[in-house]
Each structure stands twice: as C-alpha cells, then as structure tokens.
Image (cartoon, rainbow, N blue to C red):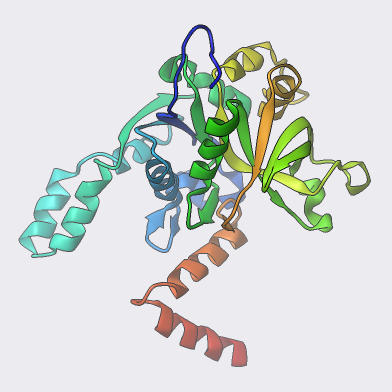
Length: 297
C-alpha cells in the first residue's frame, strides 16, 4: 500500500458525493426539488448512493451540496414528529424505515459556494477528507450489482495501491458521450491507465471503455486539482487532474460487473423506475400487466 505525505491508511473510510449541481436536465421540477432527491420508485437517488457506500465498507459520507439543497441534508436526519405520527397509526414498518435513514452512516455536508465543475466539487471536500484515500460517488449513476461497484474499485485499490476509476464497455455510437480511457490490461477486468480522453470522436477514441461515476482516489488528487487550471467555461475538470495523476503517480481502472441504471436524464430515470418496480412483488405483477396492455393498444 502506498504512502501519502507520511500517512499510511489501509482502509477507505470516507466517500464524497457531489450533489451541488443545478439539475437543468430535469427542469422545471429541479427549480424547487434537488435532482438527487428525485425518486426511483420511492427512494431518492441520493439514498442509492449512500447505501452503496455503506455496503462497500464506507463509514463516513460527505455530501457536497449548495444553498438550495438543504433537503438532502434533512433527508438523512431524524424526523421525530413524523415518526410519532406513523407510530400512532400503527405503521411501525415505515416508522422504522425513516428512522433508519439517520443511522445509515455518519453523514456530513459541505456547501460548494460556486458550481465550478466536478473537480471543484471534489476539491471542496479536501479538509473533510484529510490525508487519506477516499471514494467519490456520482449519484446520477446507479448500479444493480451482486458486489457493489464501489467495493469492486476498493478491492483493486487494495491490490495495487493507486487511484482507481470505474469503466464500462460502451457501443461505438455512444463513445463520444463519455470520457474514455487508454490503458493496458493487468488482469481480468483491471487496467493500468495511460491517459483519459474526454468525449472523443470515435475515430480518435483509444478504446470503448467509458468512465462511470465511481472513483477511489489517494489524497494526491487534491494536489492535482489545485494545480488544474479552469477550462473554457471556468470549470475545474476532474479528468484533467486524473490525467496528471496517471502520468505521475499511476491510475487504474476496473471494468465493473453489474447493470448500469442512468438516473441523470428524465428518460433514464423513467427506465430505472420501471425496472425497479418490476422487481418488486408489491408492484411488479400489476405493472407488468399494465405495460402489456398499453403495448397492445
């Protein structure tokens, strides 16, 4: 395991969840409701991110929010009045369900004063993370996997001792929508990276391995982010800092195992909700019959 500034840490204890963006793809609803609070059936996407972190062994979750997203912080706090109402009605199942949200993990929040890109959001968490390796989870990307995708990254981090990014093989027509990696295969599903290319043309793409919203970083990423100059629209790009990390310190990738659900677009959210509902015994049979009828119309 590597050392960073004289500090040796063997366990990933903290995860950063950037959640300060405007959510413009979901307007007008995101004028009043944070995008991360929009539900896949009856759980907000932010909950899926926190639950994956906990299932991966994370102890502390750091939410990077903005001034209009206090509801995300409130969601993981106790609501004693609601608990009393549910208990009085005899609805102990839901009372316990909302009570459990406050004990999922140790959750804190930091305000990103200006939305200056993903790199800036991660850098905002520097003091809260401290001098130890940490995870980053983008809540727009939801996964159904036997082994949590973040856990898969942590396993590779523990094997090689360097920063890790999650990747997935995409169709040729989709390459230009993603950041794409160039690297050499180390073992089944793991790569040592040479560089990352942001949204390349297919003819210029080094591979079809696209970056997804799961990362494990050594604290050296903060140094690279502080050195990264803002781009044309004034944002600090995480990909730029990761490229520097790949060149100087080493960067790895994991081709994860699991199904990807896109919660970052309205259509993706609808698909994710339908898929989730179909797996539930309280909804699946009726929804499946309704969909069959609609398709026959």
